[in-house]
Length: 183
Image 1 (tube, rainbow, N blue to C red):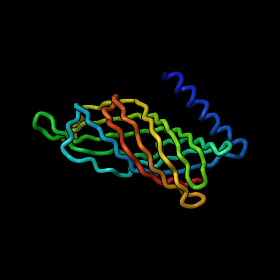
Image 2: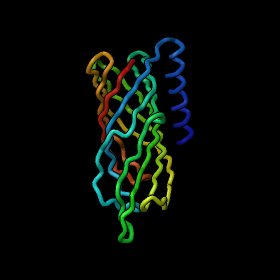
Image 3: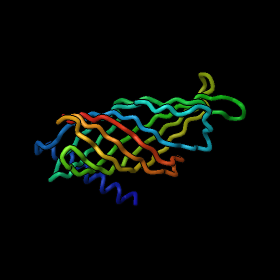
Image 4: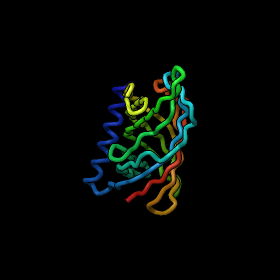
């Protein structure tokens, strides 16, 4: 399954970036607020998760007969989400960095654009007590979901998406909203 997914993603990236040569490539910049319900038994959080803008993504999109293929990444600008964790009666500071490469395929219907996506995420969780780092855990996983874009203007779109559950990172699923500017 992983090899097949890699092949599909590679083909899609090739189509998006080869379209730049043909002049059909449109750079994009976007930001979003996502909420994932995570119940990690290793991190019993004491505070509520507060959704926040934690990254800006850049990438590109192309259109083939109303089929929209886009690829983006937040590798250039992201920040950690910080929370408190209780362990053995002590309170620790937890931070999680998410580096995400996203690929989506959608269909253009006027101002509306339903889409499906796959996102390769590298998550780095750090646990600290005061200024001392106690542990650092790195995970790589795939997130999948579906959503809809709505073009507010010719270049500005609002998006809403659902994220499917992911057992590897103890996620029960999630939702997100965002804004994307298409050049």
